Image: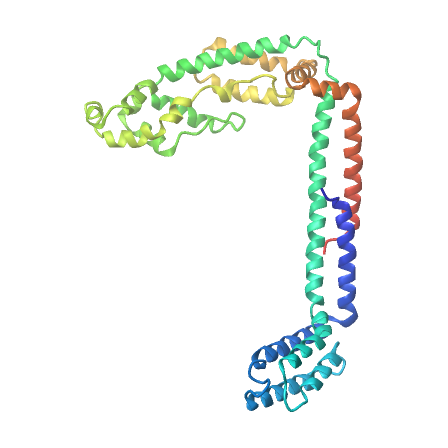
Length: 370
């Protein structure tokens, strides 16, 4: 893998050389040479086949005249003017051969090189910008790496003997209580009540239930079939249209609204209201519980909601985050990571990453945008 800093240094040098070459002649003069070289090339390509040997004499004369006019129109101070004058000298004869045209192209080589200076500067600038972008990208990668190593260090400092069950048991109790309550709610309530519940959760940004598809929401709110439970609704959706006609007025509408959203209804569960293990940091979990309690209070029995309040109260315990970090360390650290932490390898990697990031950041500040 190439070194982004070395690439930046090299492309900066190439850029400066290309800029100096353009500055030496001046952009207007280089553009004039480029235009003249293009015109000369078009003349050579147009007349080479018919102004050579014993070909069309009229074409030969036209070529001589137009090439002479081109050279005459050039300013005296245009770069590489001498190349055009020498090329014109080659045309000043009674008959031209193919080798004469080749010779003219060779003589015009300095003009072509001068004309290419602007394109070379553009390409050098583009490579420089790419190199600078690569340095910025590497800095971002190093920042992410530093964050990962910082987190690894934090987990390595955790007390693996800490009594994490003081958090785990209340959290698992709350999750089980809410899961059970939601299953009962989904089984026993009407589909319309469920849709209204899901719609109400949209005002709580920390609790992310998937919103009901618009067609399903409208259908269940506006039709009598919305008074049926979700299990019964799914059962109806699996009926054939002829059988379904005995239960609803418009089987096609039910199929379109419900059957197409069967997966959504099947998978709907309490997951957005579950705390999980290990939990979020205390300050995040505290606010999450505030919203979860308000939502759970819409369908869960008081004893289930009380379990969420128990967890919320734990977030005020000064030991919460230390216990959480210990739980994360137990759950996430591999044997290889334990070994790297014990050997001090993580600390060494962290120091190297920080030093390299500082070096690249300094370079990015030193090399301006172009």
